[in-house]
Image 1 (cartoon, rainbow, N blue to C red):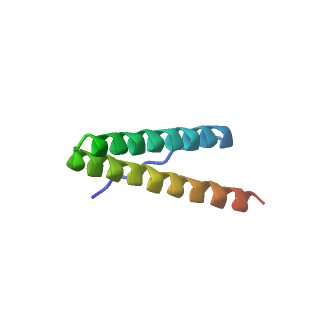
Image 2 (spheres, helix red, strand yellow):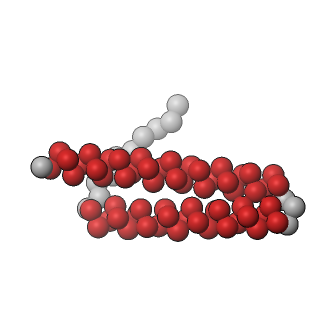
Image 3 (cartoon, rainbow, N blue to C red):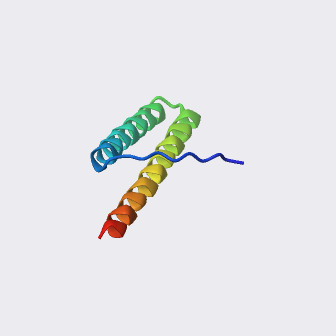
Length: 73
């Protein structure tokens, strides 16, 4: 079972987290490309999967932020 946590963030903090996730995803994708070019296909798949997980988390965070903005109206 996955445990959940709740964290309250300001909009600025959430925006900062989104930017950091974008950077992290790009790093994973570039590392995956490099691993593939080096012939490390298993590593490339692992890094690609990590990039996908970062992207999924970013999407979830963005959805939560949009929902919070709508509730504030």
